[in-house]
Length: 149
Image (cartoon, rainbow, N blue to C red; front, side, top):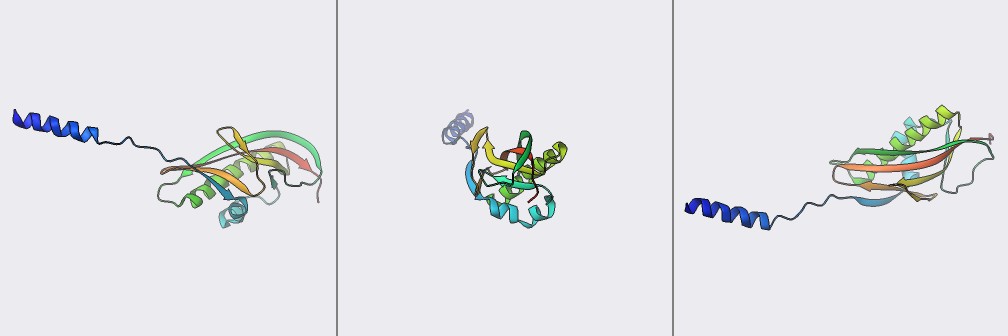
């Protein structure tokens, strides 16, 4: 009987000191140039599609073909946040590229971060949310046909 009381007491003490686990969801603003110049990005993105972030100046837009968003996540376990974010950024960009090709666009303009449908426009930074297990990047852009430069 004493063992049962002692075990119950120990369980009660252990449960009272347990701190609720908190999921990490760090908001990072990272350089677009670093992500675009990463070897993986240079290797995988099709150079026939041009990308313009925020309010960057673009060639003359001949026709707007649509707007779409991409929300991509990647495994961040054991990776530095910046590296995981670059992978998620590349996945989001590849999704925009695929949609551009489907629509016959030669450029994606007005690209903004769109995490949880909250837009953050920048010509120099993108938003990534990183946790212990996942990292995610959400982008939104307009697909257009531009005049050749």
